[in-house]
Length: 287
Image (cartoon, rainbow, N blue to C red; front, side, top):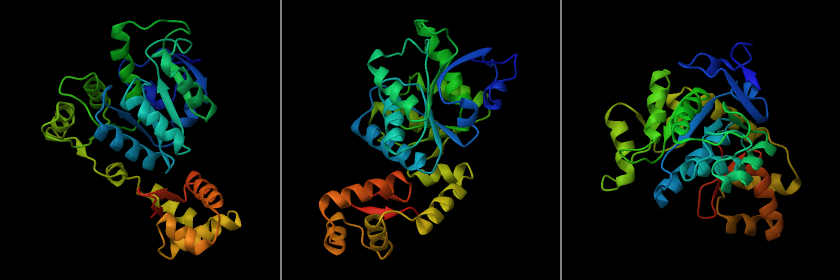
């Protein structure tokens, strides 16, 4: 439990308009989690396959660089962002509209536990067993943006609760990013409108790095890839990747490792932030 009066809230939260007087936390110390770069990823509760894909891809790439991901544990984009972060070995913060003992939606109780056990945190300004009312969801959004250095909207309709988070972000002086979408899609009207009024367009994770002056995070990861020392199997695959071999089939043919050894080594290299999947069973070194 952190309080504003006790000056124990992280600065990112304590300086926002209508700062919370108290927050309840389960998991890691959010003061440490938000001491590093953090990004809120928000969007539609019913994303299209496109919205699902871009949310997962961009969130995964950013979390692998050590950027903490903040969202609201809601259905749709929120949960996709949380899960993509966990799958990438990153840390994420879930901000609840109700008490931390009343996870909403209840179907995400398992996801909340995974966030906690993976070094992240679940937080709320409501008592443990408080059941959220409709207005609590909008009130919660100011904390999602408040804990973050910037907000990324991956897919949202023209009239969406997501845009309430954007409003809070702008009131807090935060940078807003948006992923452009199909102009005929109802679920892209919100993001496309944000782009019209000045949000920074994002078609690749590097757009966020450039917009936030976080390019040094990628440079650090590249150095890690060059200096990485792992198992003989991992080093064998890393040498092949450095030579330009990218396809899993080519890695198998050139390494003479078994499929199980290749899968294990690639997994460890990805979890260590040394390589990333480019899709289609293709792998590249972070660069």
